[in-house]
Image (cartoon, protein in one colour):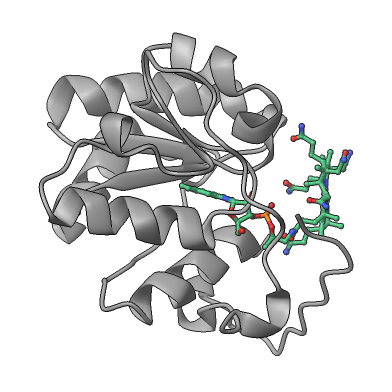
Amino acid sequence: MASVGPAFIASYIRGQGHDASLLRVKPDQEIHDIIGGIEKESPDILGFSLTTRQWVRAVSIAREIREKLDIPIIAGGLHPTFAASTVLESGAFDYVCIGEGEEAVCDMLACLEKGKDVRTTGIPNIWVKGSGCPVIRPPVLIDRLPFMARDLLDETEGVIHISTMRG
Ligand code: B12
């Protein structure tokens, strides 16, 4: 399944001068292999894109990553949107993105880049562990968004993506 949400975020943040890469975790992938893949990219921040059925495994992977790597982790996608406080209470994630992530992630990266505290800055859609629910942005105007970064999706066959809903 193509990771449409992350590919849209990647395209948007690349347009603002950031780098982005995608690590697709396979169903039977060992934790040391996952961590090796992260170390290879050496990111400043790690994001998990999650639906509810991915949650149980994702939280255990995030906990193992925390033990081995000192890196902030943000969770986004449908499950963190529907169950933000549960995701933060798990202790495995520093931030949750509620709803659409393009502008929220970009604002967050700008904040971290300036060495500012995301909690006190108050970024709409970004819930920081231990603080209150953030202000939620109105849906983005999709015509203003660049199309998703298809190079991340590792598609080997001709594929056409059609998304009939978002936001
Ligand atoms: C298209 C779609 C599908 C397509 C997926 C095609 C594909 N290539 O991905 C198909 C038809 C295959 C499908 C299948 C299923 N789907 Co579906 N699907 C959708 C739908 C309609 C749109 C998803 C989408 O692409 N949106 C567009 C992108 C751009 O938005 P997005 O993914 O939400 O990402 C944004 C934000 O969430 C956020 N974000 C996402 N990831 C991250 C990560 C980080 C770090 C951050 C900061 C932010 C962030 O930023 C993104 C950009 O703004 C949603 C409903 C909806 N309106 O969201 C249901 C939905 C996601 N599906 C759902 C379900 C249940 C399923 C199935 C399990 C159904 C089934 N029983 O088989 C399967 C699972 C398939 C799988 N292998 O995972 C549920 C998930 C519920 C939940 N709590 O998790 C939803 C929400 C529908 C519903 N209301 O029940 N689905």
